[in-house]
Image 1: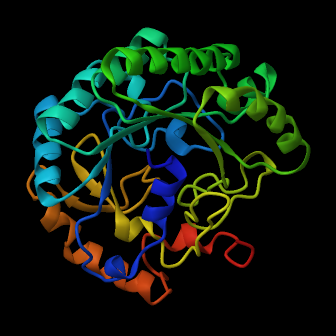
Image 2: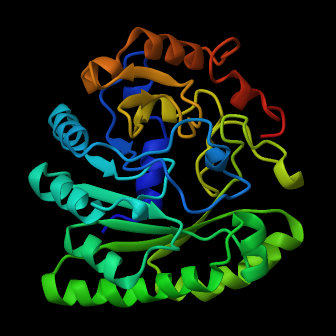
Length: 318
């Protein structure tokens, strides 16, 4: 089984084939089943409610999943900015993507609070290939400070239970869902506290890795005294330059209301590159707006574009 970091690195590497203003259809797309989230993390702008929060229409979801697979998309993430465990037909969406559309790799990231064993089992039995827990606090008190919700023990219990569920599903069906965890790499004392929690969860997952603290298109820069990085520079251990940003070229992002976004963190809709309610995925991927934005990235000058605020943040320190 290909490790999750190998898959992440393959997308963020921005190979020559994708370094063009009109690149091929991306190998990977994340589609938002819901924009709702049950946490309000300080490092995420979702809690600011800068756009409507609702669930994707089932007919739209199935149409887009079919269309993107036919266009050549190979990896489908059934999440974007919301928490997909809130979506009532999550297992059905996984089954449709895997068995009706034939995606080789269906993946999901969760904050873990609602990832109870029975829900995880349904997802894995439906064909989920990868489940990643985001673990970004060291203890119950810090978890409440970070997320404004008291659920640290529940999240860790759900992660540990997921390992048992995964092994049971593997034994019963032969299908193996990768189980992973990621954490934000904080500074100083906070990171030292995180290390103990990471050591506790590592025995239950196939792989754990760290991510830098993103400024999320400039929305969360400096929150709680933190120093986020400029752009999306990938994962710790395989960091990329902020320009050109790989996400503009190699990964698609679809909001619950059918917009193709140019950004991993489009919290207010300003990165809209095409309306998939009226435009095909391929046409939106090669839209005039998207082509112009990529050209600016290739020139390493996004001044005056929607990416300016994100890239400009601490660019000299990134």
